[in-house]
Amino acid sequence: MKYFVLSQVKHDGKDYRRGDTISLDDPTALLAAGVIQQEPLDSETIAEAPVQEPETPRSPEVGGSVAQTGEPSIDGTPEAAGDDAADVTEEVSERMSRQELEERARQAGVADETIAAAPNKGALVEAISASKQASDSEDDVSANL
Image (tube, rainbow, N blue to C red; front, side):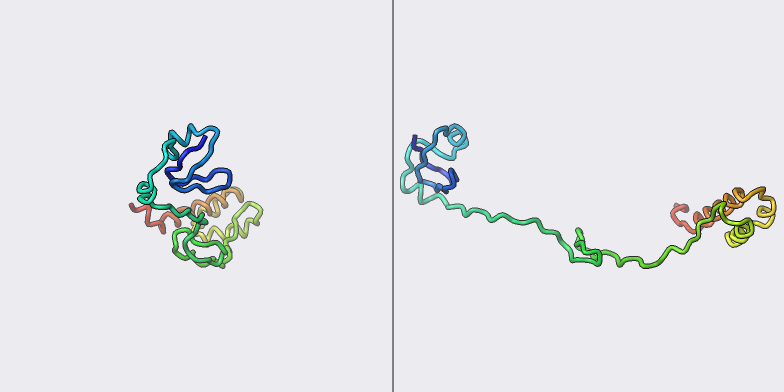
């Protein structure tokens, strides 16, 4: 059966504009949506309707510029420059000699009495870690909030 197009329709690879006729086997969905009708359109109604140009598909865009990492910045602000500084912090462990641990403990600010009273290397490692945590919390201004 033939129907009259009220708004643009693409069917079987062909574009139909307002006022064109289209043959469909099952027009139920298009009739319900008001895209087609059974009665012909008069010439004034056809002329009044603007023709919609098909939209060209847009590709997604990402803002910002390419940073050193090769990835663009999402928020448009440049990424911070890469940190080339090497971590030179030596890990304190029981694998170190007692003399090395005692020297590290003095550098970390552990009292000589505590160093002398340490029964084993594990106790020295704990004393060094506690001293570092105490000095880190002194430097941390968020602890004062």
